[in-house]
Length: 115
Image 1 (cartoon, rainbow, N blue to C red):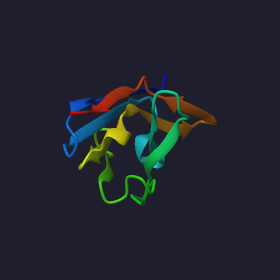
Image 2 (image 1 turned 120 degrees about the vertical axis):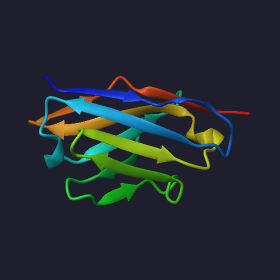
Image 3 (image 1 turned 90 degrees about the vertical axis):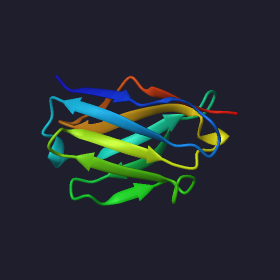
Image 4 (image 1 turned 180 degrees about the vertical axis):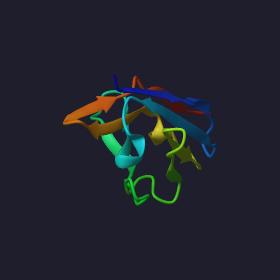
């Protein structure tokens, strides 16, 4: 059974930082690209960042220079370090992997940026 569990969300002031974690199980983690998506209230889910099995990274233009994705292949975890957070970063953040012909999602973790 494939499981993804996100953690690390919360309430932070503009300019602050958070580090999200996603712990996975049920897959050979090191083989797959891992994705972070987010969905703000009333908006479509969007890809924020991803990291390939080889460690290459991609970012949405809106987060470049502020967010950093990384992975720990030993502990089967993927991280999203978010710095200089803005109110427009407020959203539910989801970890995602495409494996075994299916797309798997975590339950999400809420990030709220507000003063």
